[in-house]
Length: 233
Image 1 (cartoon, helix red, strand yellow):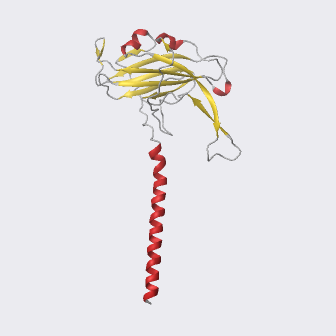
Image 2 (cartoon, one colour):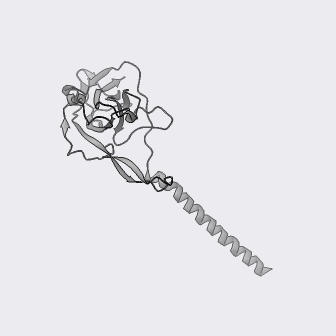
Image 3 (cartoon, one colour):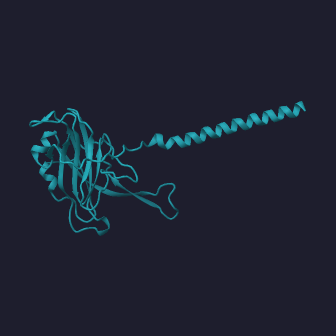
């Protein structure tokens, strides 16, 4: 009896160790993806009220208010291998290059364009993608307008679609309105930069312009219809 009890005890101890080990492995596998890929910031809805101040970024004077210098580069579609868990029969995947929305992206070799050049037709037509990048610094005053504590909203109105990255992130949430993502055919993106700006706040802006509708491959080109910063009290 004593021998059988010792056998049972050893069996239970071994089983317990195995279960604890399996639980630890499962927990590590569950946590690994979230640790590797951080969730994007949630979207904020812009006001529908009349703004207290509007600055046109498509003028030299307006861009100069924020020390903005615009740079642009065409994006390309590149082919690569299918993802590991792809349905059998799919051998390739497609990506865009460069990924210029990411934080710390080096655009020093890109050509600089004037603010008015945002209205120029770009790309070769049909399905094309163009990046536009700039950095904005919030001034203390714009004329007699005090910016401190105001809500700042970027409007990027690209013909035909756009996605907007702010400081290396595209705010979004599945199933919810997300102004930084594609809004519709020839509809503006209105992205809240901050609920209450402070003097000297800096924003790295990357706008991914898309000529569309994509499946139509239109016989025209990509350009900005409007770009501005709105301030709300």
